[in-house]
Image (cartoon, rainbow, N blue to C red; front, side, top):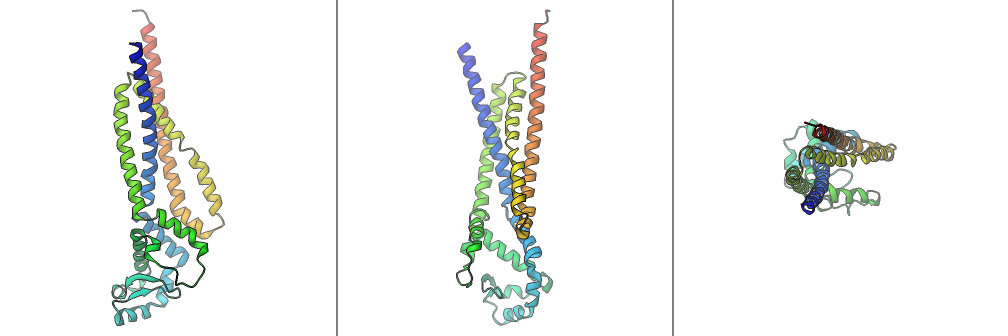
Length: 264
């Protein structure tokens, strides 16, 4: 009986550990997949195009030439004025675009190509004639993380870890007697919540790094900082839930033991 009880405790501990791991993983990759979704990438891209590049003003100046080009050469690709980058967008697609929407239209088209094809696959910068070593790191980052493939991978990891966490939650519930169900889940949620504390340090470091860069600050304010804030809120909720469950469970155990000691 004692050996069986010890084995059950060991199994419950192992299940609790793995439940905590997959809970943390599912929370993390839920936010990663949300951050790398096409909707989020497009939102950030449009913000940068508006606030940093002012693509609308730049394209409005050349709007008559673009429309004329579209009528004369409808099947030719549009080349970004002054830079010489082929946008991969047919000129005829611009024929019906109003002047006040030309910036958003081209920005969305470029973002879509980058997201689904990858920056390096979509755009060849070798013919630009300028040194691009300063932005090579940014291009590599976009190729690695800002694309449909990485988003799908993050989403898959989220689904798998969430499913495993759910299965292990059922197992933990069945293996835990009485109020230990609450203390078991409480300790798991507490540990999961504690892992979010480093996010406060990371947020502070990110703010420090991008403080002197207007572009970096804009990008961070639109993506990384809200991402870290949302993650921290989730971890805080998990932490408080874990603390509540653990305290209720401990209280229940002590009350039950106290009643058991009272002579009938």
